[in-house]
Amino acid sequence: MGKPTGFMEFKRLNKDEIKVEERIKNFNDFHISFDLNIQRQQASRCMNCGVPFCQSAMKVNNRNVGCPLSNLIPEWNHLIYLGLYEEAYKRLEMTAPFPEFTGNVCPALCEACCSCSIHDDAVGIKANELFLIEEAYKNGWIKPNKNIKRNGKRVAVIGSGPSGLSCAKKLNDNGFSVTVYEKSDRFGGLLMYGIPNMKLEKHIIERRINLLKEEGIVFIKNTKIGKDLSMSKLQSSFDDIVFACGTSAPRPLVCKGCDADGILYAVDFLKETTKDLLEEKDFKYNLKDKNVIIVGGGDTANDCCGTAAREQAKSVIELEITKEPPQNNTLPWPNYPNKKKTDYGVYECNTVYGKDIRKYETTIDEVIKDEHNHIVGVKSKKVKFENGKIVDIPDTKEYFDCDYLIIAMGFLGTSDRDAKEYNMITNRNRILLHDFNYEDNIYVCGDMKNGQSLVVVAIKDGMDCANKIIEKYR
Image 1 (cartoon, helix red, strand yellow):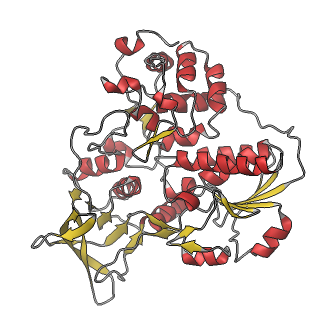
Image 2: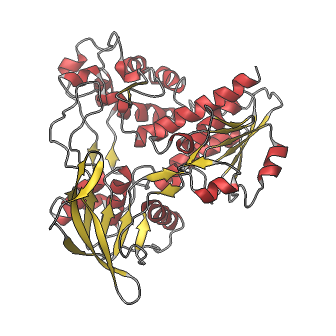
Image 3: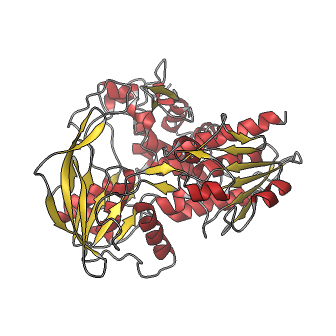
């Protein structure tokens, strides 16, 4: 299966990208797709391993290894190589409900444990996946299923992010009448408002939502459970309720002066920026000619960096509390690599500002504000980890001008306010569950259940939750 010598004949190619100075003039996707011959060559690099770790869906050292969805990766790589694109897509859709989401934003756990990566570069699995789903849409291979036999059961799904959508789709495919409630003004949750446009263009989400509507799923927006719609009303109207509300309590900044104006949580900043773009309005948080400091070193912080570059910030600094990763990977295959990487947003800022914007083992010591309570600067400090605790390093404080401080330090879980509105009990921001169950007919899935994680993990969790409900009625 696959071209037996493909991995020896062809080197891995990554998609070309529009140059930084051009792409930061807008918020569009900046990747340039392969032509068909190159795409087939890249797919031919798949080695058809005896044990394909890429689709293993297992954990090593408590971290996900391989595709959580168990995508049939060697099979559709081989079919791409043969030019049988529709057949390849049919293999993909057997396990992946939303390849257009994972093909754009997944960190590709599958590639990290590709056998080809032991001695060479991994197969470009993520690019192949995105190619297939876009070919499917372009050629009309995706058609709404309008002949679903209903079983008379009604399920409400609260939240339209990746876990809510995958749960709703699985239930709908199995005959349940599903209504999805979204508190925001647009559907997609994290996909719509937590991931910027250049990483996932919003028409891609809307295209899938429209398809799900055609298949019979009802979508209702601007509805907050416990506020706009009571839990008692919800329970009287549906046989089962699934909460897939994500993580709503961001990790706070705690330091002197942290009540200053101009301190933004990343999720709020990214949401408002996306809303302003979609509505063609001036930016609510306009970073043009402003000194910006971003606290955090993950994907969300990187997205904030890319957004700041596009808004023409005067300067950008990213503070990361962890040690600078090594240049070369220190973990054995098939672990996810532990090495320094520079994602698109940081790379763009490094290019624009002519230096690496990252400062490692550094965090905020104090926020400096003016007489109007607006931030004007910060004092940082160097730290280190000792026995699992953060310890300050003496005499390392440094001052930086700052007009906007963006906090991208992750999430703690479900906020107490939200849990109260949902009539749920939490312990340290986690819903108290038995498996997916809160009560007999109330379920929780995705980040709301597990804590913040990857889009692909949320999708899998939503499907698993749906299977629990399906099994209950068999």
